[in-house]
Image (cartoon, rainbow, N blue to C red):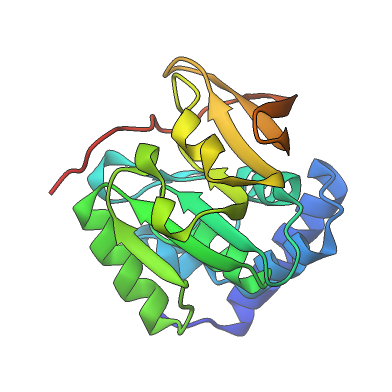
Length: 216
C-alpha cells in the first residue's frame, strides 16, 4: 500500500472533522494526524474506510482506536517538542507515530508479541522510530527510563496502575481510561508533588482492557 493523493485528501477531511466536529484545537495534534498515514497501520480490506472515525480490528483481538479518541488523548497530554512520553500499549503503532510526529521522544511498551512485532516492523518501514520500543508488561512501565514528562495509556485499566504514577515527573501528566471492561472514563492525572495528584475527568469511552504480564 502506498500513501496516495486520495489518502492525503481523506486525511485532510478527517482533520477538518476533528477540528470542527470533535473540537480538537491543538494544532500540533491536527498536524500530526494529517501527516501519519493511518491506512498503513490496518488491514488492506479496511483501507477505504481508514479515515472515517471508526475503530478496526487488528492483531491479537485488539483494535485500533477511533481517530477522535487518538486525537483527544493526544490533546489532553499537552505534548511539547522534546518531551519524554511513555506509551502503554503500542498496538499497531498508529498512536506511537502520531506522538512522534508531535516531536515527542516516545518510549512504548506492548504485551502482545504479534502486535509488538507488527508495530516494530511497520514503524521501521515508515522510518518513524521511537526512542525505545519494548515487549513487556505495561503495568510495570519502564522504570529504567523514568521519570517521564507524559504518560499515555491506550487501553482501559480496571484499577489505577500506581507504578506508572511513580514514573511521572512532578508537573507531568498521565492520560488513562479507567473502569470496568465494558466502559471506561478517560482521566488526566497531573503530578503536583511526589505524593499528590490532581485528577480531571473527560467522559466515557470504550477501550480494549489493559492486561498484565505478556503474551508470547
